[in-house]
Length: 222
Image (spheres, one colour):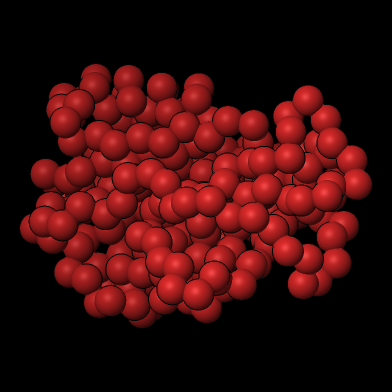
């Protein structure tokens, strides 16, 4: 689910950053508390602050889902430095799965809005198209930004009710090699749960990518 908040006056952030949200006067709580960190899925040029999350059965998310429109929330931040590098001569390769795409939605939409010259390739893994947040708009954005390529892969289509003629393997060295011409001399960005992040880091190291060219953000507490 996606939730939108009004931007506070003069509040700014850089695409790729995250915020902490506190819901005051929660009707219920649990051991995880009343504060959560969320990547900002909206781009800085967009009017609202949008967050997107998987709806786990926690007190915070039950309250968030049921809050009335115009409920006030406390926002702290922005935080984080998983932001697009400045040297447009080097491609940006974005590796993620599931809800980890929220950070990259902000980056890609902002780069398109500013007409940045960066070559951007997003590798986006899900089990099925039904599970893939923002898939339709991330695909359509390629028409507006010729420097951006989406490589979506669906790894478990047996229970899908949709057709899929794209990639079906996990994000691995062979999949990256297939797009080597677009990713040469790239800087790599990884988001997702800790296990996925560590696996992708190891995969890149195995292909000879320098640790200096890899930037990561782990998502915990989905």
